[in-house]
Length: 340
Image: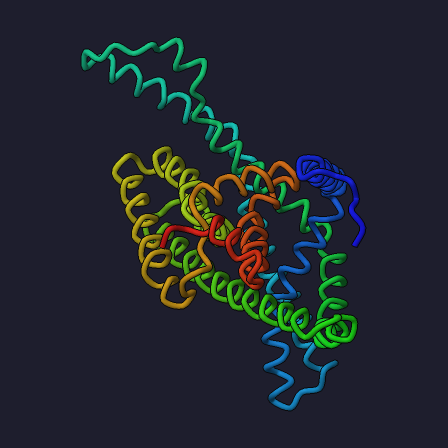
């Protein structure tokens, strides 16, 4: 191989410049990338079920039709379940924000009455409790924009599933060595395992949260359950973000005591599912450090918007699994992982 004449520093600069260009291109193409990434996400979850149906004697086309019907049914159920809640919540948003501001001012006055000196003008100008509701509205708005592309997503999922069964064979045919084929198989299997387990854990989390909020009488329990389901893909940080709007709504609607019970419910569900149940199924080596989770949330949210935040950890885990699957890059995978 001929020497290119570039020093290590020059090559590092070129690689960095190339990464910046790629990220800038991804940001500009976010409206196209988001539906495509969601399609891959859904296809990865559905492919094992499709293979299971085929093993039961159903043909490839019949299995695909069953999967497409299931996706359509689940999507319609979610839209019916939370559609009216989203509309109602959006209409009531101004009144919620006004009541939150009033209670925040009342809290400041009460603290000052206890003899604690607070810079009330500074707090009023710089601490905005309404921002949490605005954040939820932004997440729901981004989710609604994705639903507008539901036909494109469904069509892309169909084509991905049609190609998935023969993709490994194609990759093996163009690979120069068996190692390349083995890498693709190991990576795909680990990714499917992670996404399947994480989805089941997120589903259980969302159902338990919705049931608890329904029992306490908090408005829109199904909406907050779906939000908990989506944000459970973001460990540690996601559960906190998901709990904030429900807690604030409980304060407005039911009072401080019920809000404390909401916090307790979220804490118990996330501790049991996230720290006890999930690790038993997930195994070691698939976790990310808290710093990496936070940085991935910021990075993918900036590049791809609201949906990028929801997909931030699955995307980063996919990168980690790819790094872990090859000996020469395993050290980079360990850097992204947690200390356990």
